Image 1: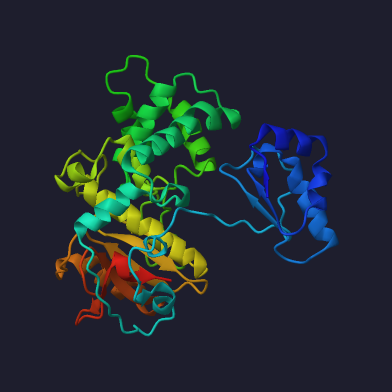
Image 2: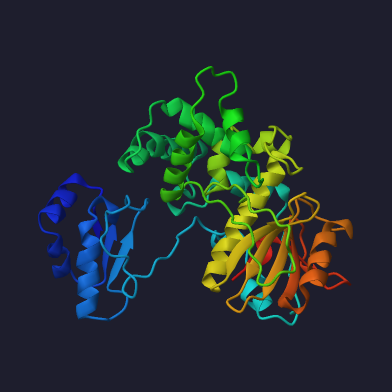
Length: 381
């Protein structure tokens, strides 16, 4: 392993990028974007020897435009590494497989968990970053603060963007966190971040910040669904806002487990719901995206332009078939909770291979209408 964020290691590799080839394979190049030249060294090495998995290039940011001369197509496979899904945290043993749901046929679902709402709140706060798991609360808060502060003070400037007022960018991040799991406009987010400021940052400035934060994998919006066919002509195109980890959003907003359970905080955005509901949806979205990536599926959301219909998660397999999912901060599910799922199944027909509600309940089962009700703790690969 070569840690290219170490000045000593980086200087040696910059002096001779080809030196990485003398290492025993596989070679892990951590923070490879610090020495972008290694990208082409790896590409040429793969041209000479097509044995897979010789090199692992990991980084907390994508390099600036033009830093790599070649895309790596046909040689280097890009894999998005997100924080741990709920099923990967060792809190519970999953009993419902997303891959089985994607096969269609409405497979039987079952299982029981003793986890309750307070346990999900604890996991929202605990973070899915592997290196932060199990830290004492005070140290965890410090690590999350440092992660955010380093992004503003160091990582964004390394992307070539000058941060004139770091405090203003942090305020924008807080407003973005308050808009978690919503489709609030970027104008709303900016206005909330700069309330009371006479010298408001320009929208072009905050757009640059937003793009840089996405390159740093800190902002992870969920795209709007793009259907195959013309059945849905009036769909919104605004992404649903998410940070990479809901623990970051909770930290930005100064939330604690107790304050979340007490209903603290005012969310920003057009959707209804409390901050706890929004952060639980963000935790569920993170988990489903991780599981879907393993199943070679994509995840998006659906919201009509007038907001009368919306579905939290549409998991689409390579053949265009969809598992539609709603996320509910509830242990019980009513007919009203599944009305959008049933509408979508009727409108999109046989391409909808399953309907699921993700809950904070204790038991996985199928309703009489065929909708699967699955506690988040029981959803796995």
